[in-house]
Image 1 (cartoon, rainbow, N blue to C red):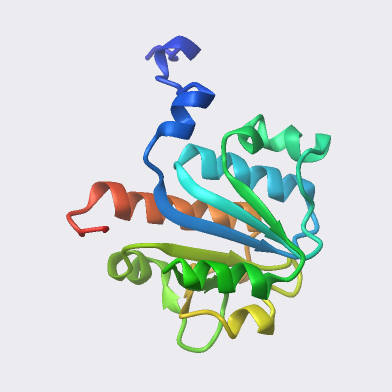
Image 2 (cartoon, rainbow, N blue to C red):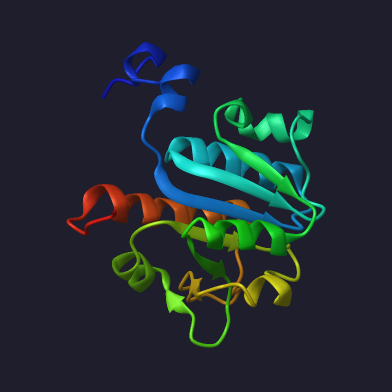
Length: 182
């Protein structure tokens, strides 16, 4: 086995990335405390060609060295917007035809594997605060909720891990299934 060199990975330039067709998914981060979590989500959004990231409330915004430390330049490639009030962000996305889903443990939440098999089209996934989760004001705008199945003693994941899992499942669904995603 031979490790691939950087020139063999087929990395896009910033310009090529910007011109690439994006997966019609927007990640909304509401009241995230950790700059490292924000940077990690940007990096994951870049990896899967996500449409954009909306930062809301007191979620840290680029440019900041602690975000850059984990984003590794993804704040320069992934489109992002900031909203003080998450309701404004979600209202804008609804008007643009997105279906909005909280990533949260609530009544009637869909297990992730069922969510990705059923939902196509323009999708928003909302991630909330590391301690309190997605707030009630955001839940009021949501068309539903998705939950990552967990079987251990702990029933929570770090936001950057949860975002990676959810975005991978969405990317897998959009890119590798026969579901029509228009």
